[in-house]
Image 1 (spheres, rainbow, N blue to C red):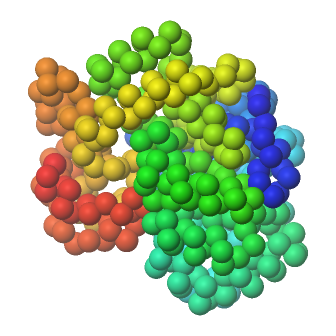
Image 2: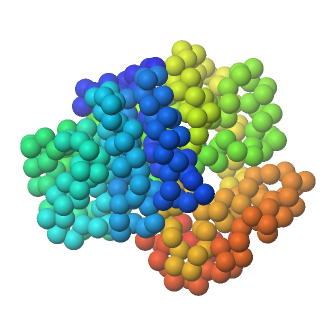
Length: 378
């Protein structure tokens, strides 16, 4: 496994981090994790050298107002001596903070849920203009200073979903150790983007990358032109390895989080992170060609994070957008198959036309998608 220093923290982290937002499920229920399989995956990855484990308060839950199953699952996986082998990251539920006391309430609850006395990397979750203004008003900086001083957290950072100017404002407002941004070879000019990555690096912030595979969209049902580009390169890399290696080729990046959902994905990503192959100029040109192909086809900038769920009337928003994008990513000959799958696989109650335009989903979408409008297009 390869390791890098994570910014000013001086911590050495594995270039592949284990993101615990997409753990394997039982009965296709987001709040029912396949615990034996998930624990096997996490422990195998740790045994192979992965030392950055990322989770959050709402992951694998039924809504954003309560804790999900991910943190307790991670706690279980890190028993038997595994906690001492990793750098543990979790996130403050920013949207639930209404007072100074709430900061400590949720951190202390997370420490209990994770069965630990400290969080190595504590992030203020999903910062945007609205959350940021409220958190500052409620005493965010004092909270972080106190939590760092008393040892409940070792390093303070934030994850981000807004525009570049807001990113700069947040970076400059506090002595952060690290930040987490969405970045992949499609989203180079999206949210913080390339400018934000460089700005954070210039401030010596550690940089953690989320959505490197765009919710798996960069690995599934590849357009014929993309397959041809990868095949002609002479590399035997999978689509996931291409995406990860493109990121690992950026020296400012500390670790790249992959939301692995089964053991084959875990093995593939871990093996890729142990290889010493250099990403060449020719490889960069391949990715440039692939970028052009994808950007012409993707209709909705959804990463299937499921932050918008549950929908009050039962629309499966990410599933609708996934199939909508798939329809355009496929060649024309395969589009009827996608339309058939949509009819058969998405229950009528979960289809896009059931949206009542209540707007509840809008405040939770980190991609700032105009969801009701896009569901009309679906």
